[in-house]
Length: 88
Image 1: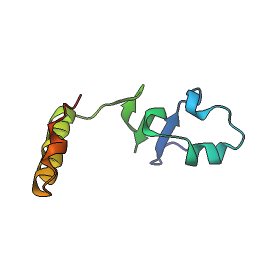
Image 2: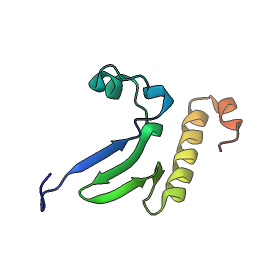
Image 3: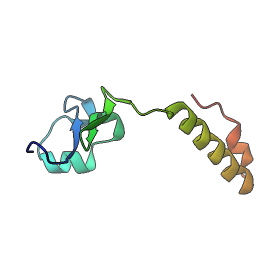
């Protein structure tokens, strides 16, 4: 990393139980790391995830849109019985 250059950085919480023990760092990152292990994400210098929480505006609205889209897909596929559970 050098000043003035753009970079995307992901910082993983290496103390998560699903990542221990680490015998091979690359294999652990590829095969054992999941979204919940990501503590920070920086895209072009902007922090988009901090301490495991997404930080962009309109997140609640996007979640609602995705829930509605998922329900529509289930309804259109004839699988609406799966859309009746509560999303938390």
